Length: 144
Image 1 (cartoon, rainbow, N blue to C red):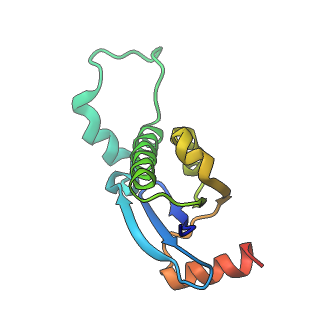
Image 2: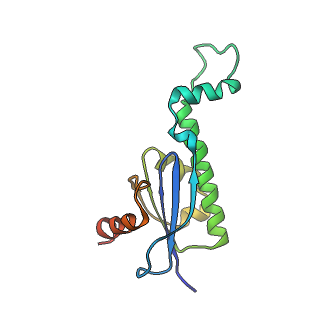
Image 3: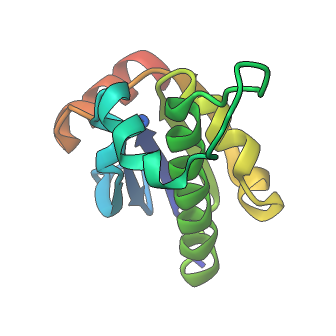
């Protein structure tokens, strides 16, 4: 049986899953998730959600940060996607690189099966890098 490993690079609006079967092979991007609302300005998000707000809301009611809600929604989507990916074609270990506070949100939503595969987490956003540069940074900085 092949011992595949995976890395996830993520932030509040994009997540990219890479896999490989051996250290000699390059990381191959196998799945990605996008959440356009994660890039929107808070005012735009609030205008979008006005149809869902409570009428007559008072200043005494607790206010939920709309960015936190969007981040939580996306982290649940990514966590669900990871669970499905693991169930379809299991990997041996998962390493997660994600921006803060998205990393904490994502870890809170991972299923127990996915949690058991997590080997390391890094509060670092690598989403803008091409696969080759992610590989180079991973080898240089985290797997010396």
